[in-house]
Length: 458
Length: 136
Figure 1 (cartoon, rainbow over the protein chains, first blue to last red):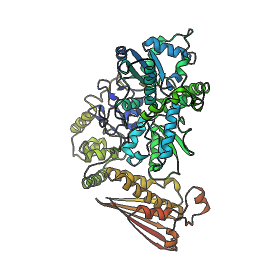
Figure 2: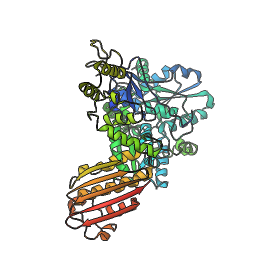
Figure 3: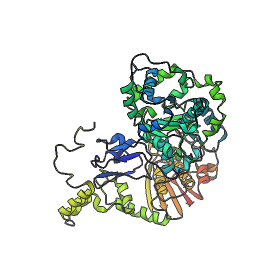
Figure 4: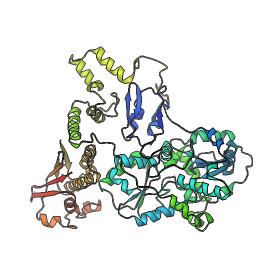
């Protein structure tokens, strides 16, 4: 897939979507509208943060994944998963038992992606040391954040660190390890287990990379269920040798401050996309002190709060922190064979430059954009400013912008319609038909089995 | 396209509001990111100046296809020596303001650096008007 075409993992199931406003209201980039009783995602604005999926009361937003059966076509079937996955299992299951369950499911090799993390860490350190023009350096770990910066903060794209993510590290490492064991590249099938939909998009259409290295993607919640079915609490074979390159730093990498703790004298970690947006606004205005490094993550508690995680995010963090204490810090593994032989691997972690893709421009022609802005400003005078969402846009300002872009009408505003009815400018039945057009026919009739009714989904 | 914002002297919690609004609109116009950055930095400095030094102020923004004009008009103590105030590091900010991380004396110099035209008119005891023009 060409890197210019963006892949989005989120899909709305039209049969399930009830046309409410939950997703539209939480979207940090105002990418969702409701049309004809169904939510629609505007691809140029979507950053794949997954907040809509979390907010949907009827689970109509889903993520496509590859069929697990696809693994059978390979001789070497590698499951690559971020260490955060281990954190969500109940503590009675040991690491060995979880690994054993993964082998039972059909994989032949198990790799956690954050290894050997020292290579990525040194590579990022080196980048930060050499590239000093755009500060603070911003981590590219979270793909939703990278996309957010591309579309909404284009002036900050140059601050993004040109290094790949741990899943690339893990994938290249797994390949080189297997090759050492005599495997041919085409015999190896790499399957990445993702904690969120943003990682899916970044694996399928990577930003700052030519093509993806992974052969398939598995949703972590789906794999969690499979592991829980296959897992055995009896003695499991000792698999610790497969984790000999895993370190404390690697296990903590995907948690909040997992990167920030390593880089720069002044570093900051921010999790939760709305918190990130508030901060980036300030950063763009140069309202912040001189920082060296910024770790920004779209989910609260970073990957432990990933949309496809099953366990409670705080319990996950707690288990991982305790797990991490049992492992050596990365610097102690500085002289292992894996790190010493890392020259080639290091080269593969360098990413292409990330280009801005601004998505909020009203018109490519500036004079017309200005004219549209003027019109939107005048329209705003007529809208109630309640931001109710009943028009199918997240707020009055967004509706006004949609109107000048030709995708919405004055009559979409239910309050304006009410006023027109009151003034005798529009018939009640016409007004009602307008509302039905937006929200679907018979959407407003009494129905005790209506989906999305009280308490459903909470 | 005209916009107007009010600024309350001494209230730092709203400093930056006008610059963020203007930034959002410039992005909608598709202005070059670097150019937006300069405008926003200068405007933010202007906002903070009013909050830190004056009693109250207004910001008038006019956007045209090829330029943006920003006027920041305040009622306040005024600037006795504009040339001196323009020097980097020169500051009359109070201790309280400095403790909040403002008042480093870079404000006006930074504004000059980030605008194409900058004019400052001031009457001691009455107030200051700063006019900035940036061309796209």
